[in-house]
Image 1: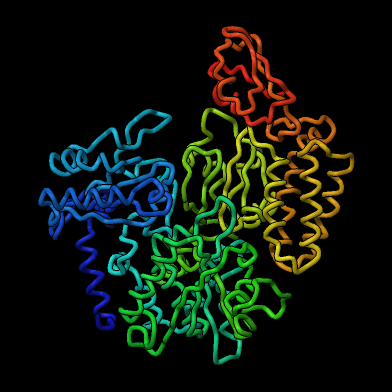
Image 2 (image 1 turned 180 degrees about the vertical axis):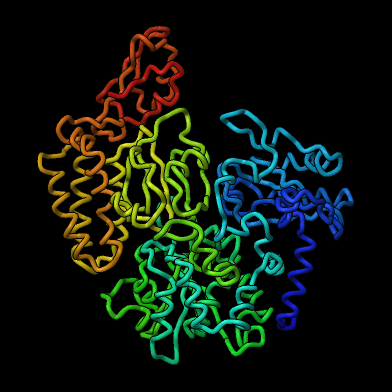
Length: 635
């Protein structure tokens, strides 16, 4: 296809908006109480989630079954089947949304397809059995927008989630895609783009929260004929999947943000650094770049302007340290991914020694809407110091595992209980890990803290890229601190001594405590080592590695002391500090635990209380899992 003009782009937008009116205008039309203009090629759209989580639950089979069913029944000209990116409500997958109406179906299987087409699409009777059932009220909630998980969210970076075909550029254009680029190239100077970013208050969503407009201004002022615009998609935090989902769902939003960034700073070459473990994200990102090149939205003289930009995908090998900007640039250059001292900062000497601007996926995804709607619009959302919204990967002991985007200022408690649905099985919440291995574990008493860079830092944690792991009463905080320190120690590049040796020493102490060999003074020793690691490490990995340990000591010191001085793990997690016993008053002698025990260490007569041989027991917990009478106890 020939390269597009701005007029061509507008024509595509208007055509697709009419075709996709069901998806983009349904809520607005109903609120204004006027009927939808449904004239067009399709009377209904069926959107199937095609994110990694739903694909892992066999959503591809559902997509293919739908296409086969509508073709077999001669409905292909009436019903449009679309595979979208991640819907966000991962706990309910595979997910399907049917328009008009926005009817939400969860945990769909390929076997349900025929019934959906017959009852919903032909007979006009949506299937209640596949709809969302509110666990609190027990009521059926048919429409996606009315489900509590979505009700408290405000999507900006996730604006197009579950609304567009992730592999079709026209669908992105139809939802105002690339209109920010049109506005910038025709109405704004690079200085004005940067000023709009400053006005918005957008801070980097990769963790540090540095003002985006200020970073772009530094790079713009740097004197060089060659500059680079870079995107950090090297998401490596345990439990984090924010950037991956944005790329799978809406790669064009990131490309558009990079075009705007490149135009603002004067860069004509761009790189997206994405770890190779994200094959679907890389596939869709590659397709998006090819489509943008074909349309003339990348390459020479974008949309007939004097600005040109080429963007390439660089696949990383999965080193966590390459999330640090200078290590990332070293990796792109073909060197080992290791950080270097700063200054000079990348805005002056970055990739191949040239001025470079680097932001993460979520940051770039916000930029097009800021340019299109204005910095003041974005700044009207959030808190005084933290503007806009933030995307979180909500995981752990939570009912509604998924991807959420909320206004800054929303409390951690609201995210967990209003959106996340609370803790499963009636258990109590114990802690929340914010900011991944570089963050901290905060207790239940702090959950009313608003999501705000400074407020989270006061707790000893960090915002990070957006990992939010919920832990219930059965979690051991000492073991959690050990886990994150082990991760940081393994991922340390080893270049600087404080990180290489300090994390190793801290891990040794934590491992010894979890193994029942803790000593008097271990807690104080951890507190003594931590500042040296934080203050002397070369990059952010070492500087933040002690956070989980320090917050555990700060908020859960009694649990640490129980491990050392009482030789007990209150949560019953650390194997060296627990013993499995059968309660003779509860054991019915059914023998199920004995049959399942891999070490055959449980004995007893039928219908009489059994015993566990402590010397043979490997503490695998199988007996507790299978016991129907709650007779197995941990002491």
